[in-house]
Image (cartoon, rainbow, N blue to C red; front, top):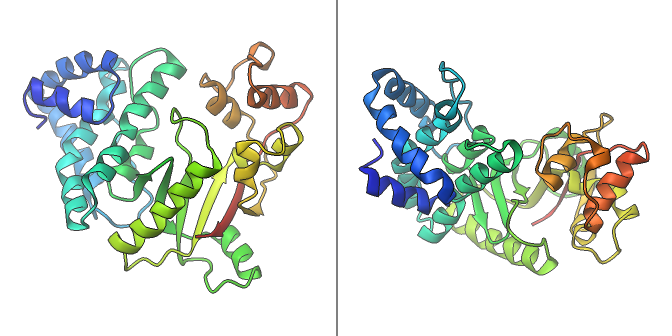
Length: 300
């Protein structure tokens, strides 16, 4: 299912799995393949993951592993993703996806393992459902940013229609995501990613005409402009967007989670204030303010 130990170790390196996790994953793989119950669980989850490979479904909800909590349960989604590699690579070949794009896209696997250890201090896979987008051919890493094939939702669709564009709710739209651990979000890096996205989707998914980019992120909360310099990367990123919605309910845990990497219920009074962004997040919360996940769009 995963090849021999040497092959598996090389595959994990290709997926950017942190070196400190590789020995554990290789060792436990023998148990997964030798235990009929675990092997059957992988096969059940694999069937869910690869069903309709390449279709826009918003990822897949993998079945829960009925197993005591511990390393095997935390790493189990990784074995399902490993089993899905032949299927997603076949989809990439069918769409003539360049191998380097496929490799960089699937390397987000390692980022999710690094984020799990950063947050919880243990090995495991953070947000396995998120990774199902990559392993179903629904999301691609193009330069600094990730782009998810999808449809325009009603909030954004109404805003686009009001702007007079000939697309709206239900039409194709590219969801934009900003991965962690990948350097600053400079305007130049964003421009390059957008150039790559225009060419990539026109060539490899010509049956899906993408005219707009959508995003839902705490980085689109306009309050950030009160704290960050006018020329900061985040402010300049915000200025690309037409804001289509700001929710009524705050989500203070989101910036805390992404900026500081710890648990979302971290004590705000003890969070560091080393950078302008850290000071913005902390000072706003300490002053009784709240953070919101904004939704926006711009023309591709």
